[in-house]
Image (cartoon, rainbow, N blue to C red; front, side):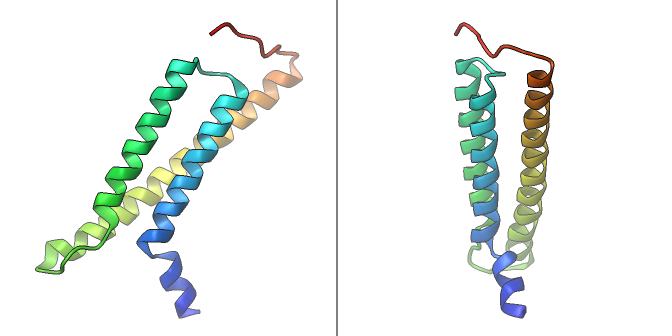
Length: 111
């Protein structure tokens, strides 16, 4: 059980979770067609930048003093909060699309 806890709190797992939720959000945004293509590209760029910044914060460095130990912990917490927010955004995009489909929304747009 302790091994599972270490795996779940590892920086690789947390960043993988954030990457998966980001990919899910992008897929739903493209599938539903709520955004124009230029905004989808902008969203993808922002998600990649956020993932890279979280990588810089979360990956462990050389432990020199107290601050280098706390930085990865704060990075993990921020990454988890970001992942939760992205999951909520994905859920609301999905539910919004389902509601519009029930109302007879025709998914045609001009890009």
